[in-house]
Amino acid sequence: MAKLSIAIHKLTSCSGCQLAFLNQGETLFALLDFIEILHFVEGGIYHSDCKPDIAFIEGSISTQEDIERVINVRRNSKLVVSIGACATSGGVQALRNFSEITGGNEYMKAHLYTCPEFVKTLDRSEPIAQVIDVDYELWGCPVSTQQLNQFISQIIVGSEPKKEAEKLCMACKRQQTVCVLVTKQSPCLGPVTRTGCGALCPSYGKACYGCYGPSEQPNCRSLSNRLQGLGLIDEAIVNRFAQIHSNAVEYRDEVVFWSSQCEKDK
Image (cartoon, rainbow, N blue to C red; front, side, top):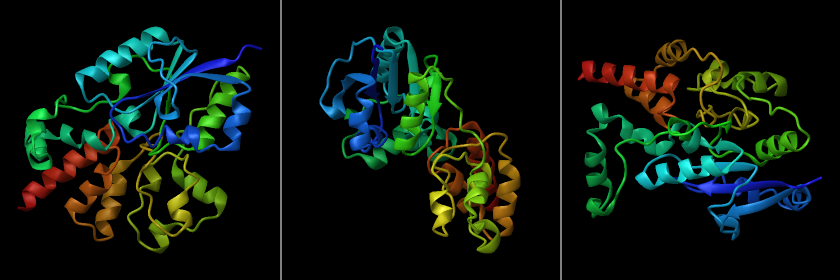
C-alpha cells in the first residue's frame, strides 16, 4: 500500500499545534510506516510547493502572504485540514477584529510595537476557511496528539473522520468529574465548548477556558446569564469568551453584546 503523503504548513501562529506531531514520540516512528512527510519546516523538511494527499495548516490568515500561501496549498493538495484555534477561528490575534471596541488594528499595533510601521498585517485575522475550501477542521489550542493520530488513522483505513462537536460536559459526565460550575460556582465554559481535550481543566477542579471552541448548538447567552448570576461583571464575561476563539461566531456575539453592556455601565 502506498504511503499517505502529508505536508504541514504554518501561517500566523505560535507553532504549538505543529508540536502535536513531534510530541507523539515513538508513536510518530510507527506512523511513518504509513505516511510520508513532504513538508514540515518545524521538523526540518522544506518543500512548500509539494503536492501531498493531505495538507495540514496551522495559523490564521493575518497577512497578504498568508492568503497567497493557502491558495497555493489548496491548489496542490487533495485534502486540506485546518488545525488549531488560529486556523479554525482566527485565534488570539483575531482580537484586533473588534475595531469598534479596541480602536482598530493601527491603534493596537501602536500600543504593542515600538516600530509599528514595520508590522505588515491585514486589518483582520480570519480562519483559513474564510479564504479557501477546507475539507476538515481539528479544533483546539493546541490540538492534541490523540486528535492527529485518530484523524490520520481514519484516513489511512479509508474511514470518514469523525467530527468532534459534542459539549465538554459530556466528557465530564463520562469521567465522573464533578461539575465545577455547579459545585464551585466557577465560570466554566464547558456547556458551550466542544470536547477533545479530555475535560482536562475540570478534572483538576478548574473552569474550562474554551480552548476547543464552540460546541454543537451552544446556548452562549444562557450561560452568560448564569455567569452573571454567579457574580461576574460584564467585562469579566467579555474576557471569558474573548480569550481564544473571539472570532468564532457564537463567542463573538457574546463579546459584542457584553461589551455594549460595559459601555452602558460607564
